[in-house]
Length: 381
Image 1: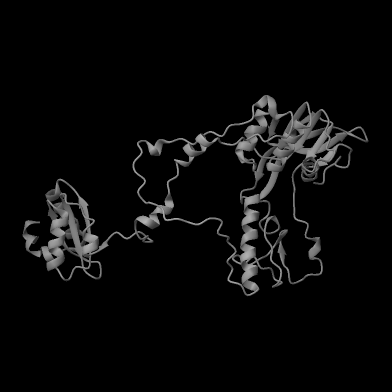
Image 2 (image 1 turned 90 degrees about the vertical axis):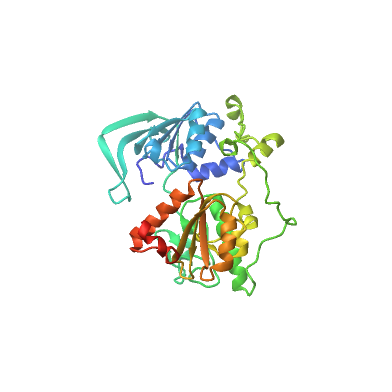
């Protein structure tokens, strides 16, 4: 960021500051710290500064609270720990005594994006404020260092990101693959790991392998699709993760989120919907098929209750609509006699004669005639 005063002593850069903190180097801040930025790096820098002993930490960002790119829970935890959020303010210049930082002048940001949705901040130059600070941490404007591509014309980069094949992550140089922030821009660690796996699959295939990189760490057993019934399952709430007490968080860099104990973990696991069991219960039809194949196996799933069924021919045109006090029994009889039927559908309804009449009238209105096997009922309708 090109800003007046950026060269003063006491101006730190977000990523370098966090690297020093996490590698155990001699990272120091003053009593009053100003962090500039609204992303996760800025939030991490603010929380690290509090743990290093800063008496006051303020965080200024262009975005309003709702627009901040940092995770919402990160913002909330930083505020809970004492960080002071100054949203919708941008840095105008860093103030100093000619050698060291003494503060910063901020200007009100009225909009971060223009009408086309592009990053193009606008400011109200009449509304400014000054903040005292002996340390300013700048945590904005990150970009990939692509200087190593100099002279490599076969690897293309657009707007600071390396271009790769969407599925393969292969660059313009066939033997070079790329992933992570240098391709996507700033993203998460999990996304970078996923890109690494995708690249490993592509590289293995490129070298003549089958692209299989997964390891079987345990034998997989067949699941019992019957889970039983648990009342109020849908109302189960997520188990709250325990946190380190607020008064202990700022003493050091201990983990804030603690682990679930065995009882809590089991309780949380009970909320699992077991989506994988859909593969055990029945074949998956994508998209879901409204009509069933008219076969003995399919008819056997029909209940022995009252309702209405419809028979369809091979083109899935309705040829018969009927109500019955016993769906399965009636369908089994039709299975033996109606050779033209290839598909069917049914719905349970205690008022099956009324529902039969409704479906007949709907068909007549749409087609101007009755279903082929119901034509003798046309006069009634």
